[in-house]
Length: 551
Image (cartoon, rainbow, N blue to C red; front, side, top):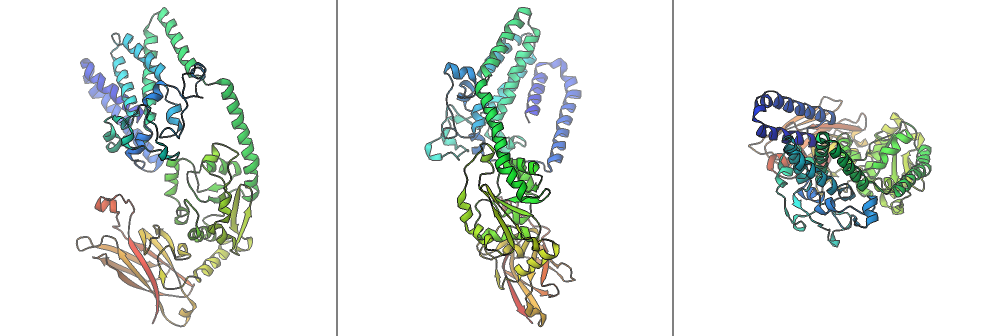
């Protein structure tokens, strides 16, 4: 985006200021410009597997916007000379929105001044200098974000975790909010301050251009300017050296404390799920270091991409681990989705920044942990830094896992009321469903349902009765729902013209003690697409209850 924006500004400026070049610009430069960036976009979107990342709120752009004071006054502890001269100031997450990268990477007043001087001296000799200046101005303008901030501090009531910034705390709007909200590409450049890299590059380019065109004495003077810029931006070298030594010691300590334990508990090639999941930077290091595979990953965009390939059980195990999530964890082991579950007693994001770390011992006494500890089919190993949970050796293998699945399904009684209180719900709603709500669960466009068949069905014909509603079905929008019994010849197609409660009777065969039902809604849609809602979920049917009847 920065490359494309800078190149576009240069193109437009040249088009306006150099009329003699317009034929060449229209006929050659513009096609090359458009084709090059279009191809770059196509290759990038193909590589990441989607056309764009999720959009962020304008308050997020504002929180990560560049404060004018960050440009002019360096942050203490970053640059050696300003610290020694006493002109740097302390900054932290309790004082400002965004994170530390916003204020430790954006001190740029010296290069701005040098670039402006170079532009003033070069503009008469070289028209393109003004075009480059416009690139610098555009870069810093976008870096400000949607609101102007001049030492805009965070109220104490917001706390350390408050990163996004409401407009009321800024000075005035900058006018670029519509760019960050509406224009493709710009609307995913969430950390606004990063645009300052484009501005700094443009000012540096101005210095380089003028140095190349000045005389010998001028070159000597500008070499002195560059050396001054380098000295101003030098870190405290003794402190930097000590920091690097400390970082290396931390890596060795991680290997000693954690990697050694993990290698003892997890075999190479096993599939591991760290619970609860989040922005798990530690997984990026531990997985290749210990040789296992994992669903978890660090980096918010990496996480978004990974989640699209996760099984439903893994998606359910986020945030706090409570009793209701124990069945999802158990199912991942029984159906072979994961070989090992790991519950770390440290933060998988922040512990990667500083080690040793604080140990969260309270999770060992949670209802989630207690429920799994009481299971006779699981083996739990507790260490100082984490716990590993896996099936006992006698239950490993496809045949043994299938027996375990049947055992769990036999514990589920009819009628099944679809709510968060349904125990072992993940064994029934195996694929394509959203989070259980108070009185129902929404399916996605394609879903899979596993029905348990009690022993009474050996002697009598049994039927399951599904009670459900169809999302946004009405006379103007008829919705087709297809049901099919996997492995048998039974199927049913209904066309719903109402979202009211419907019933479907499904014959059950007790040959295997369970029956899998696939559900597909070809024209399922989301509230966002249909009614301009903020809910992006694709909704199929709202399953409320499953009854068992005999005939």
